[in-house]
View (cartoon, helix red, strand yellow):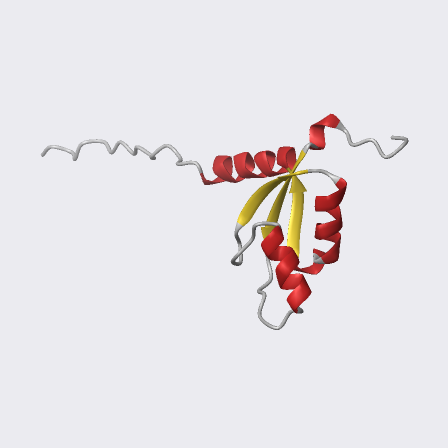
Length: 98
């Protein structure tokens, strides 16, 4: 990639707050609020542009960031792993007659 072009496949970012806000600087709390995050493990979708990336870089130790494609693939893999399995059917032979 040249010239700072953003690839088409990463047009949206999935941002999750993974660390708590108590004890952080007021400016960091404001940046997290501007991203639309209010509580831990909350996830938001934001457009991938320089202003959002700058905000993410400012509070990167508090966040988890991935592209929308990576997020969808991870969710599908988790759903597939947690999918219900078919029940095991065990057929016993009838008891012997005497």
